[in-house]
Image (cartoon, rainbow, N blue to C red):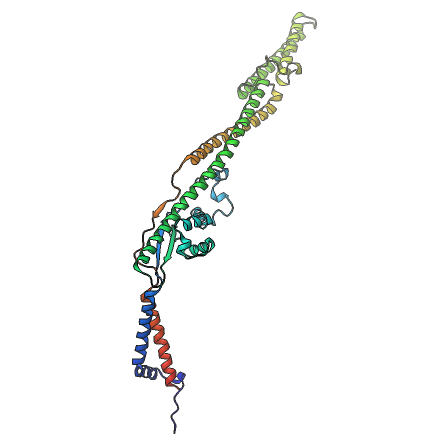
Length: 385
């Protein structure tokens, strides 16, 4: 009777082990052969060298706009993106700009190095061989990857290592140059704007001060509090004197005739006192702006006080704005004139010693595992046919 081999899924674990052990020489030969071939291929593969520069988290540049007077919590969506991350993203946008890319290409003749047909192809190649990342610590990493060709010599490896460091460092240098230029241009615009606003504020402050001064002169105001107190005291004294005179008049009237000289004199004095009291409280229109008025009339004090408050408030507002604009204007002029580096370099790009790829040991290990698995499966399939 003919023996029918079991199916692959019917084999036990021990049977699978026995089958593999029976063909172990073949499996080992396959694994060794593929491993040697992989090792040889890894030797002739292009080597990639990576050089990295690290920048400190950018400190928030001092914004000179009026909006910077408000805290981030007062601005919409102020808590969604940190100021440091926002500044880092701005730097990455500058690094990815065509301006910097073309400078790098022309400086290191990358059209020839990448064997590109034109600058557009070189731009694409350069973009694929650099990376910009914000690390967990908040630092900004700039990496440049440069590969050798197939079947390369030692000289080509040295060149690739040097160019990778030069490209990374030049990216940092160009970033600082362009960022400094952009900040200077921004400072120029800020200085012009603040200068114009400063001049306008000076005019508005002068007008507000003159308006307050003229109002005080027209109403003969020296100190509204003291003059009001004096007016009230004078009115009180006049009222007391009027009451006294009225009592005296009643006493005289009970003893003397109406045409008696004392009664006539007392009535005349009463009229003068009442006239004076009326002038203090309401004032005769013909004498409204007379220099003889040493204090404001009582009926006009609420309006005068309100007008003075409004005029004084306008002067204070313009004066506060003047102090703020003066400080910001001077800061803008300093920002425009300064020529300090805008980039904080933590680690400059060094010439790499070891390649970043290919990983020979990893390639050999992976291919050995894959070969062992595929060869074992093939042996088991043959054994079950």
